[in-house]
View: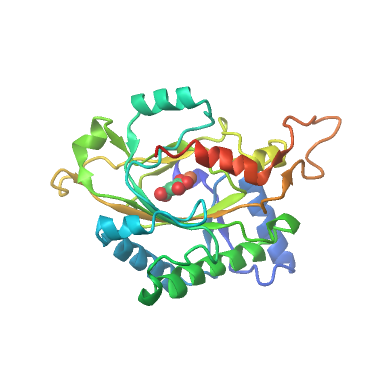
Length: 300
Ligand SMILES: O=C(O)CCC(=O)C(=O)O
Ligand SMILES: [Fe+2]
C-alpha cells in the first residue's frame, strides 16, 4: 500500500479528549481502523527525545555479546526477555504442529532479534538494574505509551491491567544476497494479535502494509465483527543501492503491543452485530487466544 493511502492522524488538538476537536480526531482514527487498519499518528505528545532515547538504548542492548543477551532470555514471565535470531518465525493462523514445521522448512527465517518488556515488572532480575536501562527507559517509555493510548479513549474496562508489551527489535545487517535468494527475511506477513500496536521505526524503511481487502482475522476483528481491520504487514529488506557495498543495513523498530486483560472474553462490541450483521465468530478468552498465537511463533 502506498504511503498516501495510509491516513495521517494529527493529535495536536486532542487535549484531554473531551473537546469537539478531539471527537473529530477520534472519528478519523476510527475510520482509519475501519477502512485501513493502519494510520500514521503525528503530534501524539510522546516526546521525540524519549523515543530517540529508547532507540539508543535498544542499539546498546543489541550490541552486547550474545552470552550476555541470552542471560536475559529466560524470565519468570512467559513472554519477557531476549529472543535470539531464528527463535521466532511468524506464521499467519496456522496452528497444526506438523503444518508449522512444513511451513518453516519451506520459508526463509525471520532474521531478527528482540527484547520484550512484557509489563512494568517483567524486567525484574535481568541483571541490567545498574545500567539504568530498565528503570529509566523501558519502563518509563512503556508507561508513557500506555498513558498516551489511554488518552485516546479507546481502551476501557478490559484494558486495566496493562497486559501490554514493549518490544525492541533489531534486524541485523547482512549481505544483500541472503535476502535476495530468499534464504532469510526480516519479518514475514502477519497480523498483530492484540488490540492495537503503536509502532516506532527508524528511517531505514521496509515496512509494507497489505491492502485491507485481504485482512487477517485477529482479536480486533473478532471483537468488532469485522468492522475494525487487523491488517497484514511485513518487513522486507530493501533492494541494494549503489553505495551499500552489497550489505543490507540494519534496522531497528519498537512495537508496543496493547493487549486486553487476561480474563477478558472477547465477544462483540455492542453495535457491531444485529439482524443485518450476524455474529461471525465464537467468543474467545483474550489470554488463551494470545497464548495460541504466540506459541505458533516460536521455533525453539
Ligand atoms: O519492525 C517493524 O517495523 C514491524 C514489526 C512487527 O510488525 C511486529 O513485531 O509485529
Ligand atoms: Fe506486526
